Image (cartoon, rainbow, N blue to C red; front, side, top):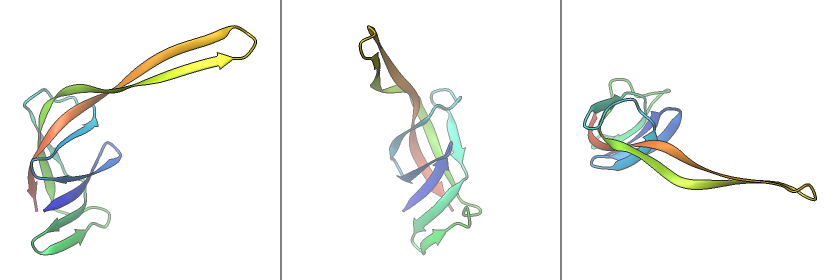
Length: 103
């Protein structure tokens, strides 16, 4: 069984016991989060496609912690002017583990 769920404008294909990185959530570590924007649901009775969402379906997840993504280097340069700037950025994410997909 799997589901396609929309979290903060991004779509994730999840199944039970998956661990995924989602955009930063305000919940503390160990908290339970419920996502109700299910776009597609595949189970024993077949595939259910939402219009735009599947009514009555929800995905429950447990927050494992706050993490940072890989570093992205931003380098700016203007030729012949002596202008060079190098900056790095690490995006903040929340790691969640899918505990239940409810129909």
